Amino acid sequence: QAIHWAADNCDVDALRRELERGVDPDIIEGTWTPLQFLPFSRGGCSAQALQCYRLLLENGADVNVRDAVDDTKLHDASLTNNAELVALLLEAGADIQKVIDAGGWANYERQHLDQLTAMLTPKDQTDERRRSRRRQSPLRRVPHEVLRKIAAFAFHAGFY
Image 1 (cartoon, rainbow, N blue to C red):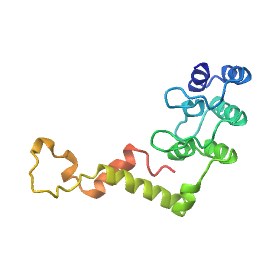
Image 2: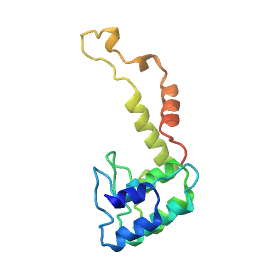
Image 3: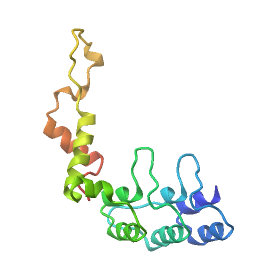
């Protein structure tokens, strides 16, 4: 879709043309909407990218659209410490219920990191069968605290 290309490339004029032609701002290509195609970067967005976000949101794009792992753009923007984008998304009505339910950003961050760490932690073998060394997780000997640091680094947790 041309609108997805325009979003992915932060082409404000092409995005505006597509929206003026009546293209649905929530049209899906693959599993993504144009809003999900828009880039974001650690610490901030270019003025051009912010214009694209604003244009899509003003034309009815769903600010709370979720990706395959149930994250929203607000989640992604908060991971990269992107204050301008976070403010824009909140202004557009981004849902922060998960953050409220967690009791604030710090708790939300901690819970997210706990989930990531749990996913990396090898499960204990409770059955009597022995697994071959080849099938055992290479993470089985890594201490839990180190796995937590790996998760924080690999998934940018802690940059909220």
